[in-house]
Length: 161
Length: 257
Image: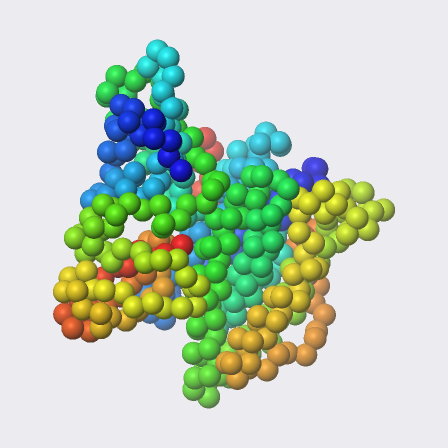
């Protein structure tokens, strides 16, 4: 999805390093929210991002954080555009992002599947597969609430969509 | 108002008003996890409403806030089903099952709309509503096939809500403003922008029937109710709902956070 020449640009690197406001261990590039960055003449840059869920309340903060990061790096005109198509999917989350989430205590998304199926999820604390879902909706829309049968710790699981 | 604006407003208002009703449940649901679930489902619907209202505003020149907060009752186009009072959890889950199953079928069909932005909104919403419909189905199964008391209350909720679902499949509002055109000949349908709501009845009712059957609940007998929200003719509770939803914005116009 991402043009290889754009990924190497300086503006891309700066925008890519912006952390997610609700999951500060991962960046917006790790999550696949950052779609592309185009640099124009005279320090102007156009950034396209896509929401994870329609109602994601973090989008405004992400927009402001991108503008701040690029302005501090010397870009004078920063335009952040929200794009809806193609729809965001957890398949865009990087392997690095998945590792960071897991280390943070959030079970990363598995492969996409029908919502009626509940696949087993490994506990991010102790690694046990003896886990069960408590609620389809966890602390945010993008996560479900699970609990481990071995270490007894509750944990968030990033839902595959 | 153009036919496209009228259509988009109907879908936006359904999601917005349903979201407002779900928000009422925060701190009142039977479990803490359910408070969170209902809030998150409402938030998804609010996001869908915002995207659709923004799209309407592109041609009417209004902002999403103006459309949500400054229209009066007769200008809202949501079906009456979503505005009805719902302080009983069985009613809330019946409503969510019916509405989100319908939304899931609708958005699924709209992913191939000839209107690119509407198709993009639908492609996101179809994934979200799959979770909403599944969540509601779980509760309907637990309560319907639960104790005698939970079964009785679930069946009562179903009897009360069932007739109001008919308006979801009513396509007569699509021929506005030219009422001489039959709904299925309306321009929006011919050019592939809109989905004919009447075509959603069969798949939605098949899915609802399967859940009710598994939940040991009986499908209610047909009953006619006066449900004309698509024409702006709402039930009495709509005014109260809007006054709560709009009063902060109207009392402090122009203020920002």
